Structures are given as structure tokens and as C-alpha cells.
Image 1 (cartoon, one colour):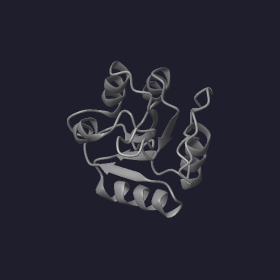
Image 2 (cartoon, rainbow, N blue to C red):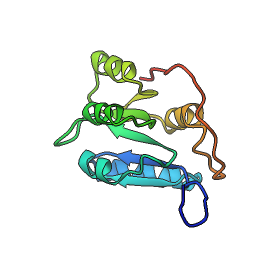
Image 3 (tube, rainbow, N blue to C red):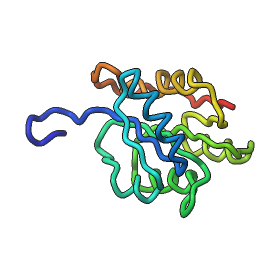
Length: 147
């Protein structure tokens, strides 16, 4: 909650990818259609700066220097985070996708992916991140494996 006015913080989509071009493209796409985004170049930067009390979901690259996306997901689980996680990777395999989904990821996209695939996942699994800033509770649904 925002201490000043008792207003809940604005929902956000976090983008975590070590590739600047991917961060920029995804942030631009999402902002263009009305979503609020915050981009991070590294997992450690994301983990030190994200707000666990802010309604949000995270688009998370699997392969990054220092810490993998799967390790970030494990850290979020240990900390009790309710973040919806959508993985993105250019070098994924079935074992990796299965592990991510077993740990609660709501999507697993192989790069390059179609923007509509991503937007469908966001609309379906992150309904509370609305373009009108209305706050919705996430629905209880089964993860969908995308590839």
C-alpha cells in the first residue's frame, strides 16, 4: 500500500534479461499497449529492487550471467513471493521447461516468440496487471506450456 494515500501500488510487469535489445523491445511493446514496466539487466539487480508487495509478474530470461532464471525463481519461491513468472529463452529444452513449470511458472516461451503468445499469457495469467490500473486478484488456473 502507498503510505501517503492508502492507494495500492500500481501493478507492473518486470522484464529481466541481460540482452538490452530484448529489454528495450519488450518494455516498449508493453508500454505501447498501456502496461507499466520496469526492466532489469541482471537477476541480482531485480532481486534487490523489485517490490514484493506490488502486484506484478515477471518476464524472466533463463540464461543470464551470475544467476539463472531458474535460480531467480527458486529465490522467489523461498521468499514467499506470489509473482507470476513467465520464462523466455533462446536455448531451452524440455527438462528446463518442465522444471520451471513444476516450480510454478505460468509460461515458457522460446525466443524469438510471437508477441501475441506473450500477450495471451499476460492476459490469461496476470489478469490483475490491467491496462486501466484496476486491481484484480489472480485467478487460480493451471500453467500452460508454450513453446
